[in-house]
Length: 124
Image 1 (tube, rainbow, N blue to C red):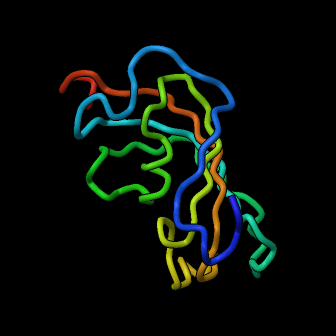
Image 2: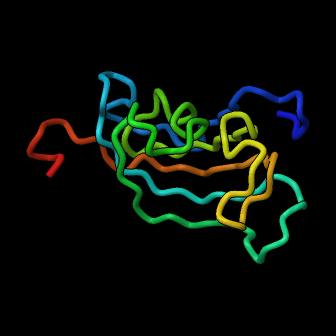
């Protein structure tokens, strides 16, 4: 993975392979993930070295998650941990994000898949 404008694809590396249900087995899965996110280069201006998110819940395919992160967790199993590197075209693009993430930023996530709901009752 190169942090240049030429990098257009998401890169992943499993740190720990989980077991059980897998992201991408069906459409519209309700997932719970934990992650840490950081900028891959030193051009940030805020005191943000990393974000820690303890529990993000979203349905796949509903564009409620950063496209590159959702791409990067495809195929993960519950309990798995994966490093996901996201280029700007699959991240926040050429605009500032909430005054924290500069334009054209390459992001690195360490994501853990906590759970996948398996039926409508689990989604509640």
